[in-house]
Image (cartoon, rainbow, N blue to C red; front, side, top):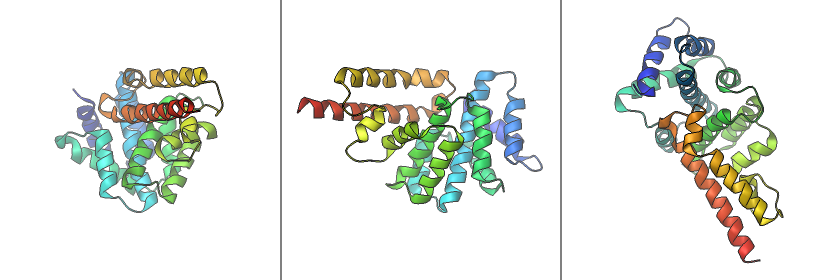
Length: 239
């Protein structure tokens, strides 16, 4: 049974409850999947991505077709499950709880409790992928994403490296993407690059709870890391 089948069952159950606010959703993930920690992580990640995407769309005020396509690129939802995903998306949009409440509860559900939790970074990366789909990250989206990072306890330097994967920050961009100081010896740059590629291998992401169906996040992240390294390598070669 795929993650979407299990998620569909879960959404049907939550949607039929009396209030179905963020507290109900979080508690339902904990109780329904209490006997399977791996499945609970994967469902929690999926719920967090859908709910926070809905809150971002509400904060921005509009949902463009480009953003819908980006959402579908990440999620690759089977046709028979699109209605269930839409139900959870609408439920989160209608919920009177603000996005900060959702982010806090999702961080408790998905996070490790430590700063720069990699699973929460995965969620933030997915949100960036959707936000930039229409060609730029709008001001309201930028404010939303930065606040999500703060709630997720992603420190400012780490946030800047995530931002640089999605938004051109100028000449220092490739170094920021790799999270390394400009002027470091090339061997250190290469060592950092290899670590990032290893840490973001799809198998590593799946092992920490990223569902197989969401592997688009891993491939886009590694593509940005590769592009940054190649840019630095070319620049140093011509020095």
